[in-house]
Each structure stands twice: as structure tokens, then as C-alpha cells.
Length: 292
Image (cartoon, rainbow, N blue to C red; front, side):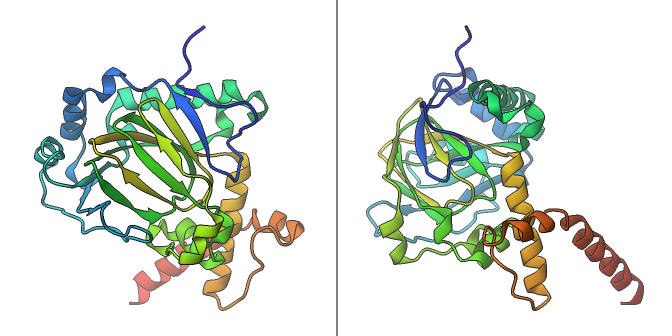
């Protein structure tokens, strides 16, 4: 029997609203050797590589916001000097430019399906993506939330992930995250601390499940860290995403929509409405181009 890329503890599931720790078999994989990472950095267009300044973990890190983006930094040189100059690197849309990462991502998804037979076929997973994180030791990764659920897979180095339940976030923040993909819409508040899940300590071969819209923050240990995040949507999360999308549109019209989950019947109607709003937006954009 082949060694699965992700191994999830009994009783855990990708529909969970709680963070949990899993195991991966990615540590030591050839795709994450130094020369292979350098090849990926050469393959990716520069605009797909996000490089930022970061704070040392010696600072008070709760609520630390994103560091300054460095659009002119050379990716290869930055990667080479991570042990000397604190930086945070994110390779976006890696699967679009590197076929070997695309194959790895799809195999990861297949392993999820085989782990949870009740999830259905691979087609039930959508919006698959993988992002490579490379960062210096002893740094803080800003408090934020992602527009999907994901597994953060540790390849080398070690870190601690602090995860908070999505339910603590104001509805407009989640709507902005869903509609605009604006991670800055999610702001840290000190009262969130009492709701935090137990910290997840990750070393090579460990993974943290990050629930849908769950805000989180990461603190690296001493070594340079390499992590691969694999994100996705399920049938259930697509339904929730549709409701937040519609609520954003309704709020933009001056209405006060009921939050997701309060009225299940209303939510069941809203999940069919995004296409109508998209058509409206497209029409308005066309009219503006004609008359402005």
C-alpha cells in the first residue's frame, strides 16, 4: 500500500470547525530540496512571488500586522540569505507554473478522498491550490485568515501555529474575505485569546488543519522554515461561500442580511443567487464603459 501524503487522526474531518494536527509524508520529498526550490523560484513570474519584511518573535506578536512588501527584492538572493536577513516568502499559484507541484497537489487531494470515503469523488473538491512558504527563523507571520480551508504541511524547520475559531469574526469581515480575498479584513482583537484552540506545534512531517475562515498566526522557531499549504473547498464550504458572497452584495445595497447559519431556509435560497449578482455587476460595468 502506498504511503499517503496526508494522514489524519481518527475522528477528525476536513469539515471540522476546529484545528487539529495531522501527519504528512512530504518531508524529504525531492520537490523541497534546495536546488529544486531554486528551480521553482526561476519558473515563477516575479509577480507571483511575494516577499515581505517580518518582525522577530522577540516582539510582542499578538495582532502583528503584515510586513512591508518588497517588490524589487530578488527571490533567489532572498532565499539564499534567509538565515541572515529576516524575510517571509510566498510562492503564489505554484501549481499553475510547475507541473510537478500540480501533480503533488492532486495526489494530496486523492489521498484526502481515500481517507474520507463519504466525501464523494474528487470532483467534490474544488478550488484546489498549493502555496509554498519559505521564511526565516525566529519570525512572526501576521494574524490573518484564508478564504478556504487548508492543510499547512511542515517540510523543514519548526513553528507554532495559533488558530482561532471562525465564529469569533464579525460577519462583514468574513464577507470581505470571501468577496475581495482581502486578508486584511480580518483584524486581531485581544478578546480572541480566550477562544483560541490549543497551539499546534509543527516539525518536519507535521501538518495543521486550518478550518474554513479560521484566523491564525504563526511563530517560527530558530531555523529557516519551508511549508506547503494545500487549500480547497468542499460542497459544504462552497455553499457557505455563496451565502457570504450574497450577503456582501446585499450589504453593499444598504440592506442588513441575516448572518450565515441563522436561518437555514434563507441560506438555501441565497446559495442560488451569486450568478444573478455577477450578471448585475457585469451589466453595470458594461454600462459604465459606454457612458463614462
